[in-house]
Image 1 (cartoon, rainbow, N blue to C red):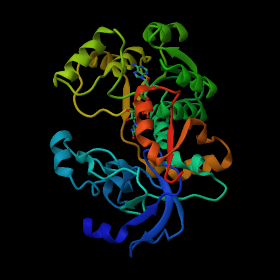
Image 2 (image 1 turned 60 degrees about the vertical axis):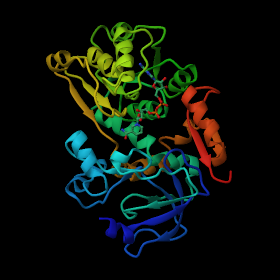
Image 3 (image 1 turned 45 degrees about the vertical axis):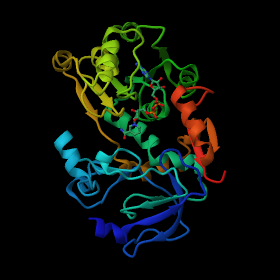
Image 4 (image 1 turned 90 degrees about the vertical axis):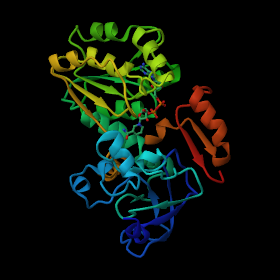
Length: 351
Ligand SMILES: NC(=O)c1ccc[n+]([C@@H]2O[C@H](COP(=O)([O-])OP(=O)(O)OC[C@H]3O[C@@H](n4cnc5c(N)ncnc54)[C@H](O)[C@@H]3O)[C@@H](O)[C@H]2O)c1
C-alpha cells in the first residue's frame, strides 16, 4: 500500500485557509495521479480512502481497509480498523494534520476535490470535514418531512447538523448547549434552543413535544460531554480520571431517554473507547435505531459543493476567528476555554 501511495500522492501548499483539515494549491503530483495537476485549488477530506476496497466501493470511505498503516493496533482495540485519518491518532494511522504550510496527501485521486473560482476559500474549506459531518449526521437521523430533531452540541458540527436537518426537511430543530454565542448562532440557523446548564433537558424536550419526544436525536458533543452536577456525569468524570472508563456518555444516555419510541439516534460525536451505564433497556424496549461513524467525506464533497454553488448554504457563517498559522497556540487556548466568542478558527499561513 505504501509503495502504491508513493505514486498516488499529491503535495498541497496552503496559501489558503485551513481549519483542522485543509484546502490549498497542488504543487506536485505522483506519476499515477490522473485527476489533479499542479496549480489546482483543492479541498482535502480528513478521511484517507483508497476508492477501491470493498468498503470504499460501497461508499463507506471512512471504513477504508487500506489506508491505516497501524491497522493491527486498531483491530486489537475495535475488532476492525477504520480508514487512516489526517491529524487524528496513531491508532488511525498517525498521519499529521493539515496545520502546516505543506501537506502530502495519499490517494490523491480519491480525496481532494477542485474548487471553482466562484466559491471562496471560506465557503469551500469546511467540505473537508465539518459540513459533511453535520450533513451525514442529519442523513443518519433518518429525518422525515416535518420531523422534530433534537441536536446536542452547538459547536461547528452541531451548527452544520442544524442547517442540514432543516435542508433535509425537518419541521423543527431543538438545539442544546450552554454557550450563549453558540446558542445564538443556532437560533440564527433556524433552531429553537435549550441551555442545558439552566434547564432539565429531558423535561424540556418532553414539554416541547407533547411528551412524545423528538423523532430523531443527534449527539454532536461526543466523549467529552459536560454534565454540571448530574449524578451520571459526575460518575463519568471520576471514572475517566481514574482510568476506569474513557468516554463520558452523558449525552448518549440523555438522547436514549428522550428520543421518541421507534426514533433514531445519530452520533457524529467522537467516542474513543469505553463508556458505561448506557441504558440498553430503554434503547431496546423503545425500539430505537442508532447510526454513527466517522464521516464518509468523499461521498458528500461533490453533492455539498453543488449545494454551495446553488446558494442553498454559505458555510462561511461559522467562521468567528480568521487568524494566521502563527496565532494557532492562542487560538487553541481560546477554543478550548470557549472564550472571546470563538466558535470556528480558520488559520491562513502567512496571513
Ligand atoms: N464523525 C466525524 O467524522 C466527526 C468529524 C468532526 C468532528 N467530530 C466530532 O463531533 C463532535 C463535535 O465537534 P465540534 O467541533 O462541534 O466540537 P466543539 O467542542 O466545538 O462543540 C461541542 C459542543 O458541545 C457542547 N456540550 C458539552 N456538553 C454538552 C451537553 N451535555 N449537552 C449539550 N451540549 C454539550 C459544548 O458546550 C460545545 O459547544 C466532537 O466529538 C468531534 O470530535 C466528528
